[in-house]
Image (cartoon, rainbow, N blue to C red):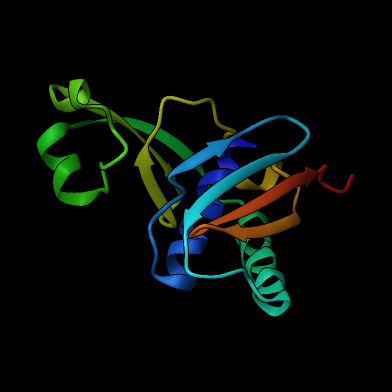
Length: 141
């Protein structure tokens, strides 16, 4: 679920030119991500978002983690969500192939092909926040 969140975030960035989720709640059964946005997604946009995320998941990209020096991370990544105390030393960066890279301490799968199918359960918009709720279905046997 956590790796799917990375793919969802990067897909939102690529589709809409907005930042990653500013808040998320990741659970085994169903998760949500909140984005600063100006409106609700259209049905067509939600379907396209789901399609693009699943395309990345099916491409079986490797998921790796590396310790990156902070100066390099600052030059390459969006670090706005990091707490100030994270400013020194190195930073753990999780990469989903060449599709996404971001600081993260969470656990991840070895490759996107093992994630299964991403489904948007619902989305809603209120007070400048777009909430996308999603779940994963197991990969076909």
